[in-house]
Length: 380
Image (cartoon, helix red, strand yellow):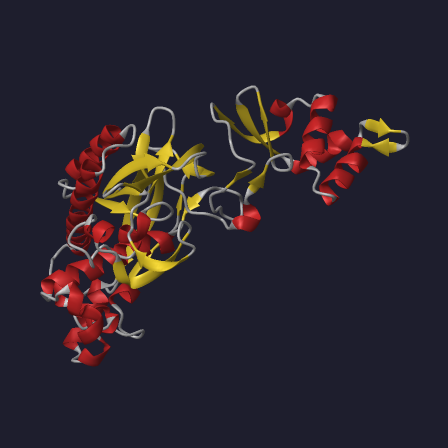
């Protein structure tokens, strides 16, 4: 009796946060100081609005007006400083009405929040993980086909490597959301390069950049990866090759597809990290550059473990990571020779110029100073 091919293999997986990671819920969900959160005695209190409104409604303020009436009036007129003053006058116990509490961070007026499930649980969307995997697969195929990145757009399209909509390789991979409970507030600094005479040197933008809610390093979440390698084999046996992805054998020729996928991801991330380390070593003038390099080297060592996959994703991962990091052999070449295929607006010259890709978002979390968005995938 022949063994039946299982069309779809299901892999229970786990994601572990390695450096602060943020996938935003959108600006309309951001927490506003004086409305969604308050800062007191070194703590950020994200309040339960219903509990806050109940206390305000039961507290007299001016004549027949309740504190809730005054609060609503201030809110309608965007007098947020007045709201904070009102709350302090009432002396509300934030411990009683807080749904979240963070410490040791003095935030901006706005905190960019993580995306959440319908029940309010922070999550790492499967679509974000899959997008980062797609970049690694694309980079792998580019190298396997020995395509010169400089020739890609002139001679090829993404369809030549990944397939069209109907037979795209990534249609045969499904990644589910991972719920992760442990979050913190990260202050984001902008590591940037500035021209001093003829040379470029690194420093930080004055005043920082922004404040975000991020997943805490070493926090974990369970999810699932489905790979339809068996379905591809059935299609191939049925001689319906037009339905197959064009480069299926470069991805699924292993008896263990998830292990081979991890190998592809690690090789891609290892190359990316090597180029990032070289960038920070060359432009090491900014304070704490050695800490950034040290953390990147730790991550680079993790890519040698064949049972896990180190992936970079989401907010703060930078131009090279977000675009698949296949166009440039290093991360320093565009500083002196800007990318004439991508023109961006320059604040200093107030006109569009070729991009240099000279900035990095760095999470400054007291005991950690690191590039953002590195996670570890493993099987459970």
